[in-house]
Image 1 (cartoon, rainbow, N blue to C red):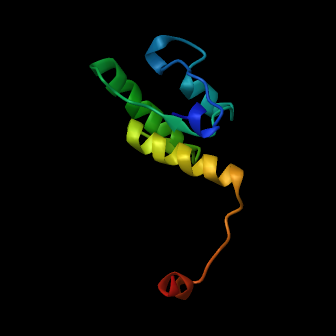
Image 2 (tube, helix red, strand yellow; image 1 turned 90 degrees about the vertical axis):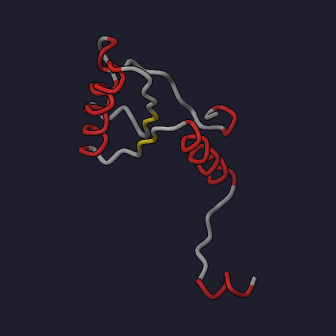
Length: 94
């Protein structure tokens, strides 16, 4: 999903999977965006700590593939073209 949109990414260890893990990487400033899906008890315990870390360090966080896809598509489009601000009235004219 991310690669298709031209967004560089890598899989990192969850907290219960060992070190260095996502929590370590967040604290070290190595994470710009986090995508985490939980499917079992261990993952859900990790998810709580990951949410706390991303909130503490103001990092965008997505918990579904659908949300990650939308974010990746938006990032990909922003990389290709410049975002131009428009007045609300301009949208009403279109």
